[in-house]
Length: 273
Image (tube, rainbow, N blue to C red):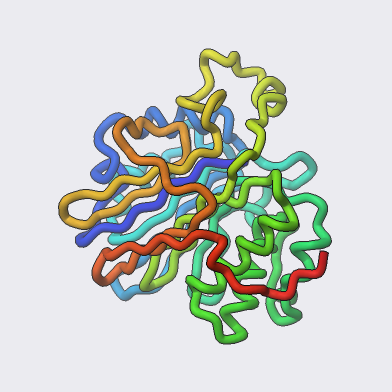
């Protein structure tokens, strides 16, 4: 259960420039709850995907402040982690995950492990470094890409299969490649984890924005220059539009053209129930 931010723009931009001033404090507020690590991945000037993760709280972390203020890029994802119970706070378990020239961050918990494990090929399984279900979600996507599917098709088909196996779990995610940014909004009818919030010790009236009523809602914004942002709740995103439910949205980083596909358009991926 985590927070997600993704951005694509025609020229390199920092997170603060994309979101406006005051967002460092907003990230700090969210990190008091989502305190189990943070990470970011971005497209560098050569089109390669880079990654930086920290398995400790972002509260007071100068690295996060520097990332928000000076890490200019044409495409970036940022993740604040609230670890699923029992999963270690380690570098290997900290999002975004990076493999095969792609970076991936997920907001949700997929249990039991059986259905997702059956979607992972042997080659991708051998590259797993951590213990999270989220890294395995990413490995399932990479398995289809390795078999010849486009990244878009692989993501849509994997999410559709996981939605059948995990009907009450959030599959919200961001995936970044050197040429595309993807946002998954697949969390319809997923219950808000009020018990987790209560266990944090943070009073309900001090929780970040929309956590008690729209925790899994993903929103987006598109600027006149084609710049596009995606965010989960918690940021000050008044006026942003909700992403269509149960969809995957693609942004072409060269043109900033977008395309949204419903999960119902997916083909089978051979999930064994």
